[in-house]
Image (cartoon, rainbow, N blue to C red; front, side, top):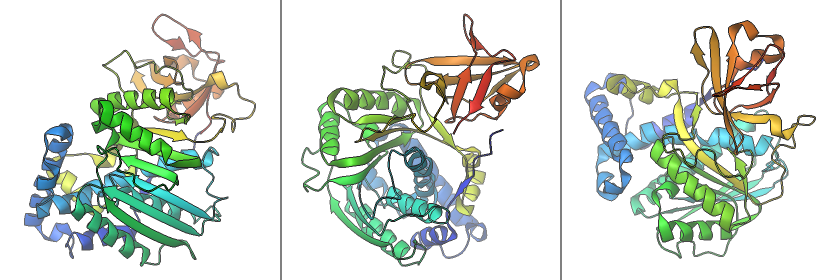
Length: 402
């Protein structure tokens, strides 16, 4: 039986830091007028994300309420997406934190340091249970908006001064202004162990996209990892398919996740479908209050789409010893409950299947079926092909392996 995934939460230190940086010294529940203003700003940002190419982001973030809304709402919502992505790379052996003494990190389109803070939060969380030899981190952030860079610099410095980082860990951060649509936005010859591109790659097209990807891959160190994360919308996910194809066709990087192989995506020719994950977490107090005003439901999960590539020869499924690799799948939906049966979509990067299990066929060997969540890796054996789905008979095996 699968253990329930631990729900992610921000540290109280970071939550307090964001409130302080947003200029909110008291809880929002004590200031209904400010809560309404912030909720309106969150709604304006939400609408802008639907059609980002039509938004004047520089002008939008000149408004104090928009800056506050991002810091209190969207920064935490985006930050926590990094946790499961890093977890999969680290626990799968594709990115070995334990053996690194130093790590260099590049955040492209860093904004106010969202994913840099996410990385530091992740390291603080894992240091409680996992030993690591990491002694120093160098963070480099690039963004086209000068005010965002100033905010990132301030937030990273303040976070590091809280004494929350693992003992002895040294963090150096530098920031520079630049645009990903400029071919020379990565002016330094430095190589990076980890490159993060959050909420930016899916907005690029054509030559701008190919130039950006060429620059990124050229600056990834051997043994390094590239994480691309975008909103879990149909539009962003469909564009990530183009990114996936370009990186597979024109670079030597190895696709690590979410796909389990580098074949042609089974959703490539089906514009109605899109690949995304859903993350469960404990929202901050500010997010819960703002959601209460807007009717948003971040406490029910955060949707996102992503790609993880590595610059090494790691075997994607080598950690699952004794299990046939062609029988390992990633869950791509929630359990769909119907009268007398449950259904579930799985994908291995090459083929996408709908599995059906009748209630009368529930057994000890397939009891993990009702516990499966989007993103789980599962071992499936004995499924019987039908016209529109694969049936799980009573003696079939369905086991969650991660």
